[in-house]
Image 1 (spheres, helix red, strand yellow):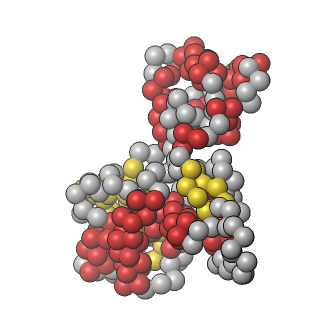
Image 2 (cartoon, helix red, strand yellow):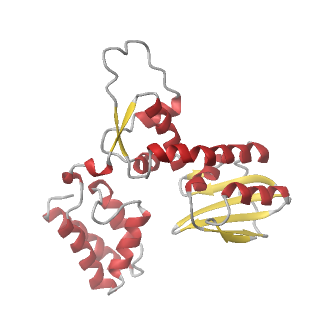
Image 3 (cartoon, helix red, strand yellow):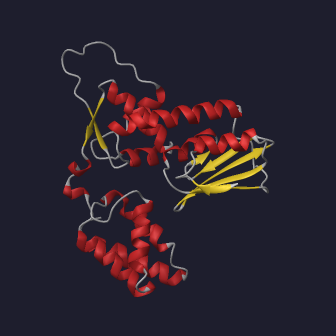
Length: 264
């Protein structure tokens, strides 16, 4: 069983695998992101994704509108991290998929930025926020995007967006346009261009493509790349250099150039 996620939903894939009493590992991939779901006789035993293992890994690809999947017959679960039954998991994935359409009306992309709302003088009663809601709320500062909050807390993006959606409905947070991020928080074009030049000296003409792919993997664009993720970008790009000495040379030069531009 294999195909493209643009043609079949995650919920339908899991229904086919569990209903057919399949065993093996279901691999889902989108770019450099990979999710693995281990099944034994139709029961979901273990799942892993870039931010961890367990039930949250099954929600990780709910928002994917594209990507590939394949069910491989071989594959032994390294551990049992799924506590819920397959039917409970399917219900949760199905509900999250349906709810996602409403969430997109408020949070159209992972780059959406939020700030804590001013409740006003008329709000003088107690405000109750669930534990996960408080964790998310504590990271909302008017600068972090939804994607950045999800990555910081290591919570699936879909679930993070759902929590923020509920906070927004309760009037506790306000959505701010992504373009409102201060220019001082963005990496200037000369600095980004210099990173590409340094990599080109080592890698050749493929350098610009490597940088572009790594920027997209971080959920950003080159023209609006946040300064807070520059360390991550350099580290990710450096990993594409096979030679250890050249890798270190690139990292040292990149950090030095950025420091010179006083943008680090």
